[in-house]
Image 1 (tube, rainbow, N blue to C red):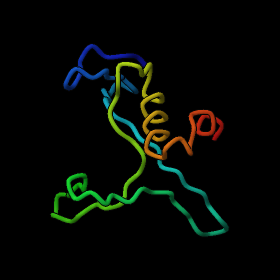
Image 2 (cartoon, helix red, strand yellow):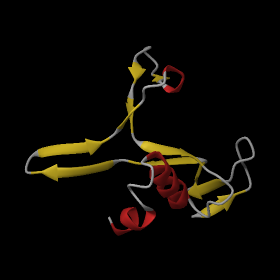
Image 3 (cartoon, helix red, strand yellow):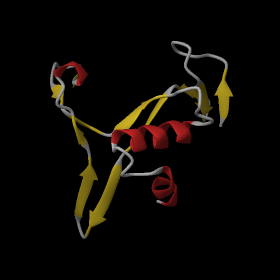
Length: 98
């Protein structure tokens, strides 16, 4: 993994397997017998709700976002955003141990 010189809106970008990324996220899940459980965030602010190509609302989403200049790699982006969006409940140390 390396940092790219190409950036979107002056954000750091990272090259992973030849592809350039400026955002990342974490999907927290567990498997209990044959049931998969996912931890998602519910978007309640209508301005933050994303729309898919068919015009359907996405009100639930994973934890993630865009890179910042403090991020050294794409994993930093994902873990920082997840920690921020869970108000520190899911820490980098916790996520790194998973």
